Image 1 (cartoon, helix red, strand yellow):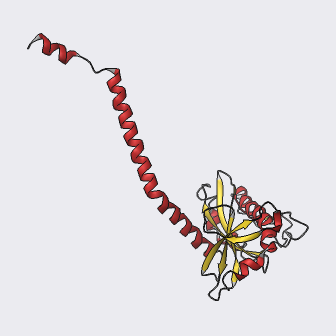
Image 2 (cartoon, helix red, strand yellow):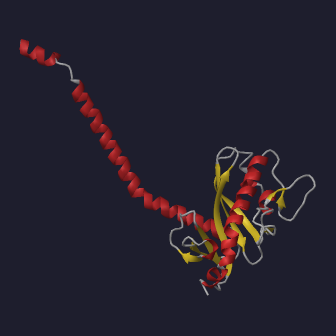
Image 3 (cartoon, one colour):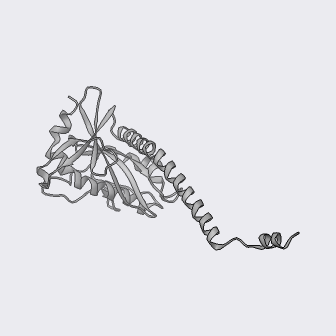
Length: 231
Protein backbone atom coordinates (compact mmCIF):
# COMPACT_ATOMS: atom_id res chain seq x y z
CA UNK A 1 0.00 0.00 0.00
CA UNK A 2 1.39 3.38 -0.95
CA UNK A 3 2.15 6.15 1.50
CA UNK A 4 -0.51 8.32 -0.14
CA UNK A 5 -3.18 5.67 0.51
CA UNK A 6 -2.14 5.39 4.14
CA UNK A 7 -2.45 9.14 4.61
CA UNK A 8 -5.94 9.21 3.09
CA UNK A 9 -7.09 6.38 5.32
CA UNK A 10 -5.67 7.97 8.42
CA UNK A 11 -7.31 11.38 7.91
CA UNK A 12 -10.04 11.75 10.59
CA UNK A 13 -13.46 13.24 9.92
CA UNK A 14 -13.35 16.94 10.68
CA UNK A 15 -15.58 18.52 13.38
CA UNK A 16 -17.07 20.71 10.68
CA UNK A 17 -18.27 17.67 8.74
CA UNK A 18 -19.82 16.19 11.89
CA UNK A 19 -21.53 19.50 12.60
CA UNK A 20 -23.01 19.64 9.10
CA UNK A 21 -24.34 16.08 9.43
CA UNK A 22 -25.93 16.78 12.83
CA UNK A 23 -27.49 20.02 11.60
CA UNK A 24 -28.78 18.30 8.48
CA UNK A 25 -30.40 15.52 10.46
CA UNK A 26 -31.94 18.04 12.87
CA UNK A 27 -33.37 20.18 10.08
CA UNK A 28 -34.78 17.12 8.32
CA UNK A 29 -36.42 15.78 11.48
CA UNK A 30 -37.80 19.21 12.36
CA UNK A 31 -39.26 19.63 8.89
CA UNK A 32 -40.91 16.21 9.05
CA UNK A 33 -42.40 16.93 12.50
CA UNK A 34 -43.75 20.28 11.32
CA UNK A 35 -45.22 18.70 8.19
CA UNK A 36 -46.99 15.99 10.21
CA UNK A 37 -48.27 18.60 12.69
CA UNK A 38 -49.69 20.79 9.93
CA UNK A 39 -51.23 17.80 8.18
CA UNK A 40 -53.03 16.63 11.33
CA UNK A 41 -53.83 19.95 13.01
CA UNK A 42 -57.14 20.51 11.25
CA UNK A 43 -58.23 16.94 11.90
CA UNK A 44 -57.40 17.29 15.59
CA UNK A 45 -59.30 20.59 15.74
CA UNK A 46 -62.31 19.06 14.02
CA UNK A 47 -62.26 16.03 16.31
CA UNK A 48 -62.11 18.23 19.42
CA UNK A 49 -65.01 20.32 18.14
CA UNK A 50 -67.06 17.20 17.40
CA UNK A 51 -66.29 15.78 20.85
CA UNK A 52 -67.28 19.05 22.50
CA UNK A 53 -70.53 19.21 20.51
CA UNK A 54 -71.42 15.67 21.50
CA UNK A 55 -70.61 16.40 25.14
CA UNK A 56 -72.81 19.50 24.94
CA UNK A 57 -75.76 17.46 23.71
CA UNK A 58 -75.14 15.00 26.55
CA UNK A 59 -75.49 17.72 29.19
CA UNK A 60 -78.51 19.27 27.46
CA UNK A 61 -81.18 16.54 27.61
CA UNK A 62 -83.59 16.90 24.71
CA UNK A 63 -81.22 18.83 22.46
CA UNK A 64 -80.40 17.39 19.05
CA UNK A 65 -78.14 20.17 17.74
CA UNK A 66 -76.04 23.00 19.08
CA UNK A 67 -75.01 26.40 17.78
CA UNK A 68 -71.98 28.35 18.95
CA UNK A 69 -72.49 31.92 20.16
CA UNK A 70 -69.92 34.55 21.05
CA UNK A 71 -70.63 37.46 23.39
CA UNK A 72 -69.95 40.75 21.64
CA UNK A 73 -69.90 43.62 24.10
CA UNK A 74 -67.83 46.03 21.97
CA UNK A 75 -66.42 47.31 25.24
CA UNK A 76 -69.84 48.04 26.74
CA UNK A 77 -70.21 45.23 29.29
CA UNK A 78 -73.69 43.77 29.61
CA UNK A 79 -75.08 46.03 26.91
CA UNK A 80 -73.66 43.61 24.35
CA UNK A 81 -75.36 40.81 22.47
CA UNK A 82 -74.87 37.25 21.29
CA UNK A 83 -73.46 36.61 17.82
CA UNK A 84 -73.53 33.24 16.09
CA UNK A 85 -69.91 32.25 15.76
CA UNK A 86 -68.33 29.24 14.08
CA UNK A 87 -65.25 29.15 16.32
CA UNK A 88 -66.25 26.43 18.76
CA UNK A 89 -62.74 26.13 20.19
CA UNK A 90 -62.80 29.59 21.74
CA UNK A 91 -63.21 29.83 25.51
CA UNK A 92 -65.32 32.94 24.93
CA UNK A 93 -68.23 31.07 23.39
CA UNK A 94 -71.19 29.04 24.59
CA UNK A 95 -73.18 26.35 22.81
CA UNK A 96 -76.94 26.79 22.65
CA UNK A 97 -78.84 23.51 22.35
CA UNK A 98 -82.16 23.13 20.51
CA UNK A 99 -84.80 20.40 20.42
CA UNK A 100 -86.36 19.00 17.20
CA UNK A 101 -88.87 21.88 17.12
CA UNK A 102 -86.09 24.47 17.31
CA UNK A 103 -86.85 25.52 20.89
CA UNK A 104 -83.97 26.41 23.19
CA UNK A 105 -83.26 23.61 25.67
CA UNK A 106 -80.37 25.34 27.39
CA UNK A 107 -76.77 26.35 26.95
CA UNK A 108 -73.62 24.29 27.35
CA UNK A 109 -70.62 26.12 28.73
CA UNK A 110 -67.03 24.93 28.88
CA UNK A 111 -65.10 25.80 32.04
CA UNK A 112 -61.77 24.96 33.65
CA UNK A 113 -60.48 25.05 37.20
CA UNK A 114 -57.62 23.81 39.32
CA UNK A 115 -58.11 20.31 40.72
CA UNK A 116 -55.94 18.33 43.10
CA UNK A 117 -53.20 17.58 40.55
CA UNK A 118 -53.89 19.65 37.47
CA UNK A 119 -56.48 21.67 35.61
CA UNK A 120 -59.90 20.06 35.17
CA UNK A 121 -61.78 20.92 31.97
CA UNK A 122 -65.49 20.27 31.96
CA UNK A 123 -68.66 21.24 30.17
CA UNK A 124 -72.00 21.76 31.89
CA UNK A 125 -75.54 22.42 30.80
CA UNK A 126 -77.56 25.33 32.14
CA UNK A 127 -81.26 26.08 31.75
CA UNK A 128 -81.91 29.84 31.71
CA UNK A 129 -85.64 29.16 32.03
CA UNK A 130 -85.41 27.05 35.17
CA UNK A 131 -82.11 28.55 36.38
CA UNK A 132 -80.71 25.12 37.14
CA UNK A 133 -77.69 23.08 36.14
CA UNK A 134 -78.74 20.28 33.80
CA UNK A 135 -75.63 18.15 34.23
CA UNK A 136 -71.92 18.17 33.59
CA UNK A 137 -69.27 16.09 31.90
CA UNK A 138 -65.51 16.02 32.33
CA UNK A 139 -63.61 16.84 29.13
CA UNK A 140 -60.08 16.52 30.47
CA UNK A 141 -58.67 15.54 33.85
CA UNK A 142 -55.46 14.12 35.29
CA UNK A 143 -56.81 13.48 38.75
CA UNK A 144 -55.73 10.38 40.70
CA UNK A 145 -57.22 7.19 39.19
CA UNK A 146 -59.65 5.56 41.60
CA UNK A 147 -60.01 8.74 43.69
CA UNK A 148 -60.16 12.08 41.93
CA UNK A 149 -61.48 10.60 38.70
CA UNK A 150 -64.61 9.50 40.60
CA UNK A 151 -66.11 12.94 39.91
CA UNK A 152 -66.97 11.54 36.47
CA UNK A 153 -67.67 7.91 37.39
CA UNK A 154 -69.52 8.22 40.71
CA UNK A 155 -73.18 8.41 39.68
CA UNK A 156 -74.25 9.63 43.13
CA UNK A 157 -72.02 12.69 42.75
CA UNK A 158 -72.81 13.36 39.09
CA UNK A 159 -76.59 13.01 39.59
CA UNK A 160 -76.61 15.83 42.16
CA UNK A 161 -75.93 18.33 39.38
CA UNK A 162 -79.00 17.38 37.36
CA UNK A 163 -81.57 20.02 38.24
CA UNK A 164 -79.27 21.73 40.77
CA UNK A 165 -80.59 25.27 41.42
CA UNK A 166 -78.27 28.25 41.18
CA UNK A 167 -80.91 30.48 42.75
CA UNK A 168 -78.37 32.38 44.85
CA UNK A 169 -76.93 33.82 41.65
CA UNK A 170 -79.47 36.46 40.87
CA UNK A 171 -79.69 40.11 40.02
CA UNK A 172 -77.78 42.12 42.57
CA UNK A 173 -75.96 39.07 43.91
CA UNK A 174 -73.23 37.57 41.73
CA UNK A 175 -71.75 35.44 44.50
CA UNK A 176 -71.43 31.90 43.13
CA UNK A 177 -73.42 29.39 45.12
CA UNK A 178 -72.74 25.96 43.76
CA UNK A 179 -70.71 24.43 46.53
CA UNK A 180 -70.03 21.47 48.77
CA UNK A 181 -72.30 21.37 51.80
CA UNK A 182 -71.28 20.94 55.40
CA UNK A 183 -72.44 18.64 58.15
CA UNK A 184 -75.61 20.70 58.56
CA UNK A 185 -76.68 20.05 54.94
CA UNK A 186 -78.44 20.80 52.79
CA UNK A 187 -79.16 24.05 51.03
CA UNK A 188 -80.58 23.92 47.56
CA UNK A 189 -77.32 24.80 45.80
CA UNK A 190 -75.10 22.49 47.84
CA UNK A 191 -73.84 19.05 46.88
CA UNK A 192 -72.13 16.22 48.76
CA UNK A 193 -68.47 15.69 48.01
CA UNK A 194 -66.85 12.33 47.39
CA UNK A 195 -65.02 10.79 50.32
CA UNK A 196 -61.31 10.65 49.52
CA UNK A 197 -61.72 13.12 46.67
CA UNK A 198 -62.96 16.21 48.49
CA UNK A 199 -60.50 18.56 46.77
CA UNK A 200 -61.55 17.40 43.31
CA UNK A 201 -65.24 17.48 44.24
CA UNK A 202 -64.88 21.04 45.48
CA UNK A 203 -62.96 21.98 42.33
CA UNK A 204 -65.85 20.81 40.13
CA UNK A 205 -68.42 22.74 42.18
CA UNK A 206 -66.27 25.87 42.32
CA UNK A 207 -65.49 25.78 38.60
CA UNK A 208 -69.17 25.56 37.69
CA UNK A 209 -70.11 28.23 40.22
CA UNK A 210 -67.56 30.74 38.97
CA UNK A 211 -68.50 30.07 35.36
CA UNK A 212 -72.23 30.49 36.00
CA UNK A 213 -71.57 33.72 37.88
CA UNK A 214 -69.74 35.02 34.84
CA UNK A 215 -72.08 33.88 32.10
CA UNK A 216 -75.47 34.11 33.81
CA UNK A 217 -75.85 37.92 33.44
CA UNK A 218 -74.91 37.76 29.76
CA UNK A 219 -77.34 34.94 29.04
CA UNK A 220 -80.12 36.88 30.77
CA UNK A 221 -79.17 40.13 29.01
CA UNK A 222 -79.78 38.75 25.52
CA UNK A 223 -81.75 35.55 26.01
CA UNK A 224 -84.03 36.40 23.10
CA UNK A 225 -81.23 35.95 20.56
CA UNK A 226 -80.50 32.46 21.85
CA UNK A 227 -84.19 31.53 21.86
CA UNK A 228 -84.96 32.84 18.40
CA UNK A 229 -81.91 31.47 16.59
CA UNK A 230 -83.62 28.28 15.41
CA UNK A 231 -87.27 29.28 15.40
